[in-house]
Length: 396
Image 1 (cartoon, rainbow, N blue to C red):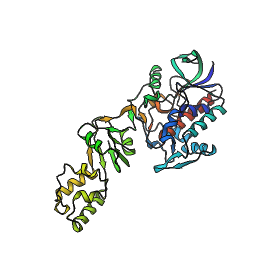
Image 2: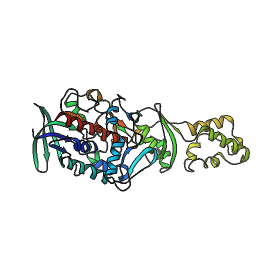
Image 3: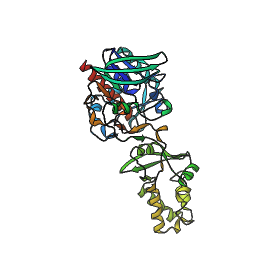
Image 4: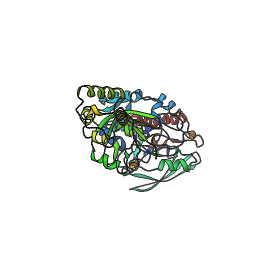
C-alpha cells in the first residue's frame, strides 16, 4: 500500500483524525487551503466547542450513538489542547467558546498537530474514483499536476456535507457511503433561517433588522434565544436552532413576552395610564418597529382602559404564542449544517468504522449526528475524528 491511511477532507474532523493516525497518512482536499469552514466560522473567531456538551445536544435517529465518542474525547480535552497551544479564548452565552483573535489560530494548531504526527495534506485535489481492493482501497485522484492513483489500508471519509456549496461543499461523503452499501437517513438543511410567503414575507421585510429575545418552539422542542427579522424571513439563534427540528407544513410558535409579566403590565397600565394606547404601553416591552406588526389585526381600542377581557386574551395569545408557518428555509446555501446523513446503524460508535467494510471510516458532518448551534458540531468533529484515529492506531 502507498499509505496506511488516506483521509478525504482537510476540515475539522479530518485534520484531528490525522493528528492521531500513525504511519504513512495523507489528507486530501479539493480546497486551496485546509480548514476553510473553520476559518469562516463564528464570525471569523471559531466557536470551537461548548462547555456544556452532552449527547442531548445532538439530533440523530440513534440518540445514543454519539455518547461513546463524546465521552472518549470531551470538550475539556479539546479546550486543554487550545490552552496548551497558547490560544486565548472567551466564553459567550450558553457555554460557547470563541477565539479572542482569529479562527486561523485553530487551523494553525491543527496543522501543527498534523505535521508533528508525520502526516501530509495534499490540496487542490479531487476524488475521481474509490474502490475496495484486497487489504484496502484504491483512489483515483486529479489535481493540477495531473492524474494520480494511490492505495491505502485505511480510508477515512471526512469530507463534510452539503451546506455552503459556494465553498465547494458536495455530497461526496454520502455517495461513498451508498457505494459501500451503507444506508442514509433523510437529509435536509439545518441551522438555517426560515423564509415566508406573502403577506408575512412583506411584513417581516418591513421590519428587517429588528431583533428580540424570544422562545421559539417547533415540534415539541423550544429554544430561548434571540430572533432576528430579515428581508427574507426569520433568523437569529432561536430560529436557527428550531430549523433543525422543522419540516414543511409545521407551525412555529414564537413567545415574545412572559405571560405573567404581560398580565401585570397591562393591569397596572389600565389602572394608572388608562388613556394611553396599547401600542404605547407595549413599546416599553418590545422594539417599537415590531409592535405595529403584532397589533395590526387585533382591532384593539385606542385606550388601554377600554380593552375587554377578550381583547386582552387575544393580545396575550399573540405575544406569548404567536403562530407562524414558514414557507421553507434558505436551504443549503446559508445552512450551517446538514441534518441526517450516513445511518449510524452501519457504524461502530466506538471507532466510527463501518461494520461491514474493514478499514473504512465515516466521521464528522456526513454522519447522522447533528449538533445544536453553539460549538456542538465542532465538538462532534473533534470527538469522531479522534476516536477514528485511535482505532487506526490500535489496528496498525
